[in-house]
Length: 200
Image (cartoon, rainbow, N blue to C red):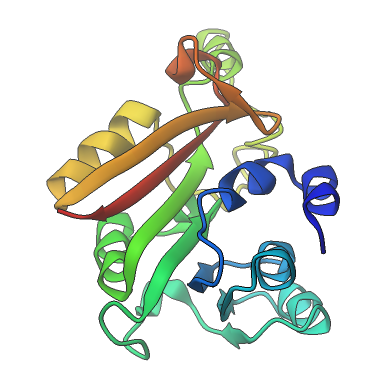
């Protein structure tokens, strides 16, 4: 898979992929259909593994030639040594976890750098929905309140505070909307938050 194909399928992933150095050893948590690792392997000569729990997504990853392990992230990453990976990706998955703090500590244990993305609950249409008395539904939060897999809602500021509490240094923090960088009022206008982190 080349950059144009990735950008067409997932512009947010195309932006994030630029933060991953060529020839890195990568762990992709909640790798889904494996499109990110497919790109990183073929275009940036990276190696690594995906972790996925869903059977259908696991099969899609395997069909792409991804080394994928079926595992629940909530059970930890004890199968991996400290600093086993150059980069750990946790993209659009952290908000589905019960123990966010514990998972953050574990992924920064196994990775020298971590890239995390999640829906920004402070995005202005979400605020408007709440003002109208409704739970937000959008591209980044596409579920109704009663069938969402999301257990946690966070804003950019919330996550930055948590990262600091668990001893992480924020190397970069951006807001995206439709895969494009939002620089003006990012916590208001960005639908997706993306952080690059490492242990302090």
